[in-house]
Image (cartoon, rainbow, N blue to C red; front, side):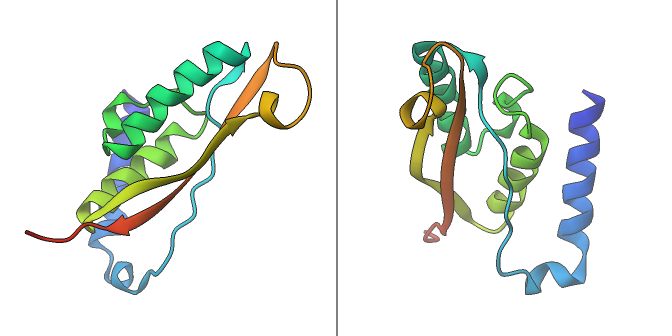
Length: 117
């Protein structure tokens, strides 16, 4: 819980910073699940992807993505800017190289502006 509080404090600090408006892009990188079998990883990563796409940062944790705090911070800031995640690609190492016994998940999203109603 302390980690989440620190991450949110950092995002709030960024949001209050005058330079924030000048930021045009932010890159956050994190693997998703680690070392599960292929089917388990796909199931876990689908849940993580759904949380990212709903901007439900509170659903993320260390078993979702090793960089879950950075992803959570991005989701908070994206929400403040009226942006939503759109999935570009999701796979795991079993799709690209090696065995499907122990895989690492990967996902790629872009954030797009949500039209105001």
